[in-house]
Image 1: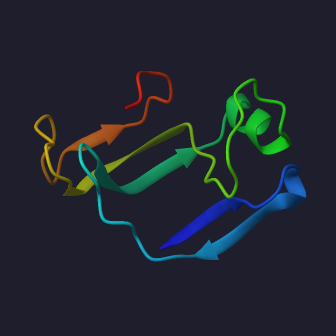
Image 2 (image 1 turned 45 degrees about the vertical axis):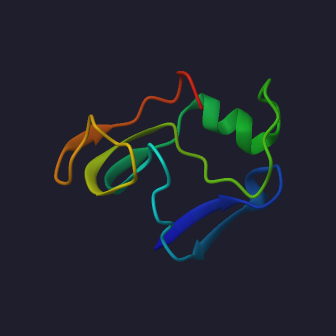
Image 3 (image 1 turned 180 degrees about the vertical axis):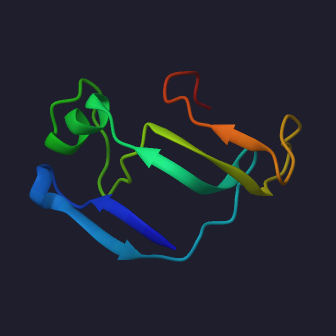
Length: 93
């Protein structure tokens, strides 16, 4: 799959790469993205000015829509074929 990855902070630190898709882990889904956009939060992460530190490399993506194509163990709210949109703020486990 294709991905844009932050290799180092700064706009010139973005790289287009090919990588194997990850198998969803517990409570994760894999989505075929149909549309995506970057927002101001993504710009802050790219430039290294976001308040929360992140480990690089990282794929920046706050906003997007797509379709669930694979589900991991213990996923109960989604099934293959569901149309979804991302929401970057929320609880993480």
